[in-house]
Image (tube, rainbow, N blue to C red; front, side):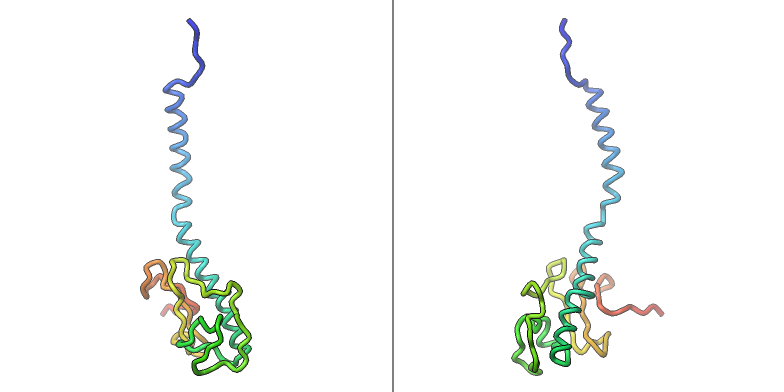
Amino acid sequence: MKRRGGFTLIEIMLVVIILGILVAMVVPNLAGRGQQAREAAARADIEANLATSLDLYEMDNGKYPSTEQGLKALLVEPSTSPVPPNWSGPYLKKKRIPLDPWGVEYVYVFPGIQNIQEYDLSSLGPDGIESEDDITNWAEIDI
């Protein structure tokens, strides 16, 4: 009788079990990384990208855009009061106002409630409402 080449059922089951063990070890390490990446992207937008653009606007015009003018003032010269005297934008490289990683607009307030001398800039985080998971440009003070 001629013997046929191939894998036995036991060999196939052994390979499947080994793959299952490897997956069980790797998947827990990757879980939650997507959320961390979104939070890091929002932090980068708030603390670097938008902050730099807002600072350039302030250097040119002597003050930050008002709450009513919002982040749109970084792209289009505002026509509402206070009209910037030396607007030389657009101040955003991508020529659009970024959304946070959850697809929601960043919250901009000037003058700030938390940062009285500057502006407040925040993302409402994954739940989309004002809560503990918000990402902000002000430090939380633990008392």
